[in-house]
Length: 336
Ligand code: AHM
Image 1 (cartoon, helix red, strand yellow):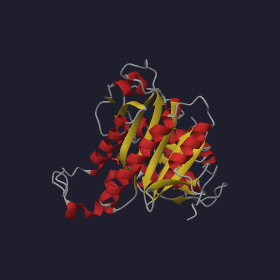
Image 2 (image 1 turned 45 degrees about the vertical axis):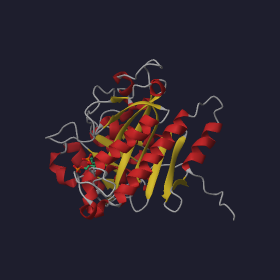
Image 3 (image 1 turned 30 degrees about the horizontal axis):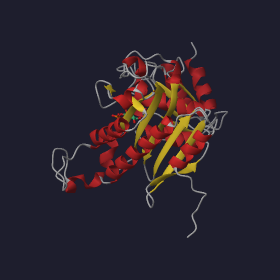
Image 4 (image 1 turned 90 degrees about the vertical axis):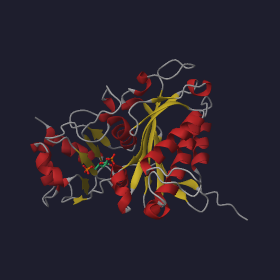
């Protein structure tokens, strides 16, 4: 039997990367492997979502005699479980949990990373079979090794991430992650249960023809932004307009598409919610890191997302993210 060596699995890829740094300890590779494992487990349950009424909903007991959890709680527990039992993570913060979780044991206290994640983003789309995702950001802790991690390890600006990524559970399941060296995408091959490198060295096209925004909130947006959205629809645009509007309502799917094809995603503040809806630590920072490594940009309309100094775990921020030239055009509409 011949083995197709053109296929590189996630584990093989991370080990290859590791070999380029003789002093590396392998902790980050191990962490990414743990995240890949959690993603595969979540993927199995996401694929069964439509069967939930047949197999049992929240609070019921499944055939193994286990409680059947809501998918987002399930995803949260899978992520926490693999990271707690791995060797690389000292603690986590999750969009599903009020407070951060410190894994206070001997191995974890000597682990150099903490992870912030949104276990299942866009979860209102689960019931209608539309793509959803998981988002994560990895930070090197700043507190002393050998002791439990602290809040200070988590409240770091996004620019200090060492890696960030997402999993999109769509027509196929993909894990995409970035380190400072580049962004790479892996598609889950269900035949062998492995994420395989399918999108090496992803670059976000500098321009695109897609814009993604919730048009229902149009009259809640500030004037400069309304002018930009109107311009997106004009044929006389110098840079190839009009653009096509694409909005899934799952950030992972929307930004993934725009990363690959070129485009811009907008989740602004509104009159009712000036701080916007999306969470800085769990959603915006990881995507801002990935898009910047891929050549794109991300701001809150005033400053770079990655430079925002967080003051609390669950803080929200407006988000504008996408292809470099489109972002630069948008910025001209915000000028005073
Ligand atoms: P969720 O965490 O409740 O799923 O909300 C996050 C989602 C994002 O994935 C998406 O971009 C946004 O909410 C859509 O919000 P809206 O329906 O207001 O446009």
